[in-house]
Image 1 (spheres, one colour):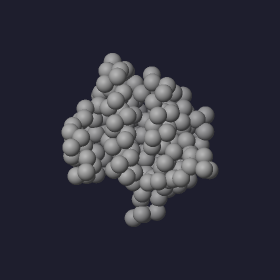
Image 2 (spheres, rainbow, N blue to C red; image 1 turned 60 degrees about the horizontal axis):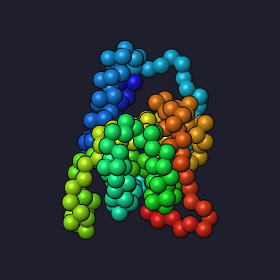
Image 3 (cartoon, rainbow, N blue to C red; image 1 turned 135 degrees about the vertical axis):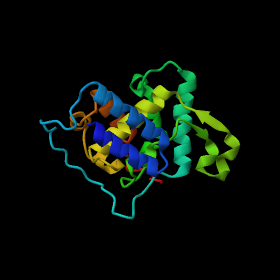
Image 4 (cartoon, rainbow, N blue to C red; image 1 turned 120 degrees about the vertical axis):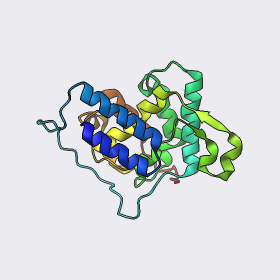
Length: 199
């Protein structure tokens, strides 16, 4: 467990996702402190996944949609600063779906949904520089990042891979609780046939 988390954290750091890497490194420390084994002898139910991107053609979420995601999480942080987890906000998944999730094509890599907790909007492009800085609550950004990271460790690495499974199937994955399974399924629910997909 700890080694897997550390390996994924190293990958995130190479790609510049330092905030997500710090969350995983903290998780690795907690795993070791709790005495959890590096690998479990009992395997979780097999999950078949689809939507794995072609090497060299990984699709990532566009910067305008990342800005929308930051605004949603930042807004929640300001409205409910004591919120302990994204799971405690039932409206958050629906809001993310309406503004972002339903617009994502199946081949979008999940890790591209990870955003920093404290940064300037200008990191997403010059057109966003005038928006200033943002600071998302550590509890909110941490719990959101953990959901994405847990799916990534389970090799469900694209939006389409998540959509191919029900919340019941997802909750059998390592580190995915019932609440997390419902949250990510609702947040990434595909659009209706009449909704145009944008990246």
